[in-house]
Image (cartoon, rainbow, N blue to C red):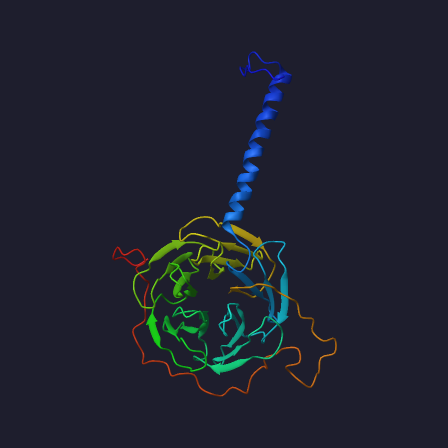
Length: 333
């Protein structure tokens, strides 16, 4: 029996040690389950929550089935080393599959399965140097493309794959900003935002038009790559960053400044892309003796020269968009 007298002046040395041990064990019994519950609440598994495809320098995709260390990872190649990777539900079946955007020409290559192979759909959208974005901008359950034109700090949104026409365009952000797409208010429609790598500012909009930020906060460090996804399965997209300097993915489940809700060490990659509705992943093993006469035998999208259709013409010159007022106080941030 332990003494109930906790006055250190009345306890012997052994009893004091016993009391401290019991207190430490009681604290551990409380803290460990609490930590497990917190982690479970910050990231979920299954098709109700988003995951990530990481793309290396050779355009090999590592698609995580879930954002946990024990996740199955599907590995397959799609595109060329200079292509910009995308993931989207191109055929409206509920599962994101890969795409590649060739910024040198505006060529788009989309595939409808998470396996190595040739593109199921190709077309041109945008101009050389544009940044591609994928999202469901009209809430119809199908992903289409948008582009962000850094020279104009302007978004161009298309709700149809393959027509090469933007139905909506608007300016938002400033030079050097990174564009982001997500359903930030959980209404079923994707909208856009920007991240400012120099100071970690994140400014998100709930509508596809210019204006003040609906959410603004700081998250991330210079050099981080920003994406958005529904990491906890609550129906709303929030911010995450991939930090290539340490190979770690950090996500935040709230639109607010603060430390990451969850992090996962994944290794060194070139890009990170949000993937939705991933039910199962599988790996593709390239052939041991690829056909050296076929440039696409190991890389399903050729290195170019075949796409010559010009992108849609840029609009007339317009005044440069400066820093945005994210707080609504009349001052730029």
